[in-house]
Length: 474
Image (cartoon, rainbow, N blue to C red; front, side):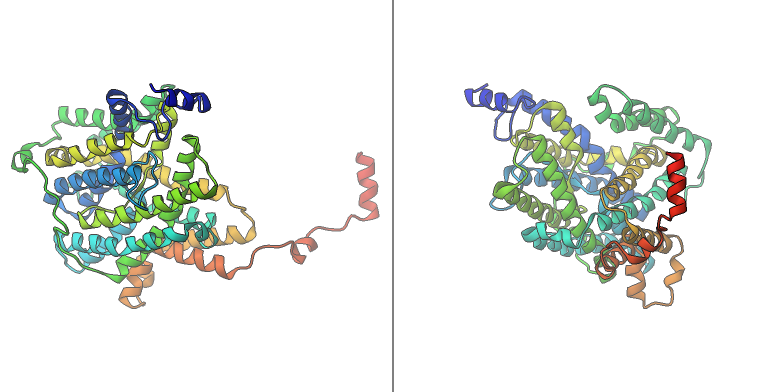
């Protein structure tokens, strides 16, 4: 350890390695593995869900490989900072759950028209590529975006991301869409094993066990599925040895109805990334105000958009910084951005081998559903948490109530929009798009609350009789 590192430790006693320190090989590898362990399920699960719901079958191993490889490249860009792109901090970039509802809606639009799996993927990646430019543009003045994307709007959108996904998780617990044995006891047993394991391990006092709870739960679920004869490895032999990234392998298609919800979510993603990077700066003992901080935020949000664009080019879904990795920094005391290079290398190497994706594809739906039920529930709770930071006066309560009601309403009763033009109906049938548009419009139209006359009128004046009664009580 150098004298400079020892000086940093004196200034930052909670950190073993500060932002610009260079740990040796083995400490860097150990810290990197902990970050990968904490984020691996988050990186691969959206692809598994999209593949299962939209029937992408044989393409799933390749898509998982691309998700891992793109996450590795994105992490390298965030940590290394290339020109103005990147936060220059220890930030892990991975596939975002926030876009999952909109991506599934986009796939369903194409599927309802009779599109093939290739058409579905071409549209998903085409609209994701175009929508990523929204966040790239916003990165230049992200600090001003808070005037429109308020905590009320953000919290509402996050809730509407999580709630529809819970239905997906419950369907997987039952056996998956169209399963012949849907709701069978062995399906519920497998999901229960994962669910109970994650709950119990999450209550552990050991922080590393808590971070690995979902991974351990999935492994135990796979072991149980193996003994129940639910695993089939026959297709693994047909997989290629190495996955080769091919730009727009499935083509490029654009659909306005699929684009609008994704464009809105990229605005929200910019705000979420700002929050993640601020938390990262705090944990890393770096400034959270001033020109250095603003420069990092702009670079980080720019990298978020650029990496999502890169993800679309190389056949993966939009990505964002992972907030759970801030907890790993706090746990390990390692904030060195150079560890990010090791994380990037591990993810990229894992992505090279499609057999990893093939093994994950064999995971029975109930096993995946047992884990994702908790994860998607956590997404909805995160939205509630954001709302709790807002001033929940009558105006904001009205905005939340109407926006959540409209979002959930169109997802449960989609036929209510059947009289509208097809493109408009497709846009508004997305709970995220409907809720976000409603929340933003109401936030702009409804005036901020003041002390209103009718509120004061509701408070009865204290009469002489009342004063006497108060005096008697006193």
